Image (cartoon, rainbow, N blue to C red; front, side, top):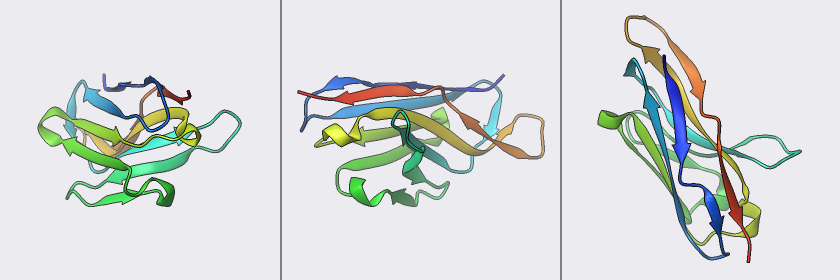
Length: 122
């Protein structure tokens, strides 16, 4: 059984910071890329940040310079450091694992966490 569990969300004032964490637990053999998506109620889910297996990162234009994604392959974890948060950053943030290979299988699949809520408000 494999699951992604996010943590670190909460309420923060504009200009503040939060650090999100996501751990893939269970029989994980390997993971290709990992990413953070976010979704506002009634809006389409969008890619916030992505980190490939080689460490290459991609960010949404509005987040460049404020958010930093990182991963720890030994822990099957991905993190999102969010600085200078703005009200428009408020959303449910979802962890995504691309091409996650379950131990014993020869193919990968995408897995999603259930999300963690980030609210930026004064």
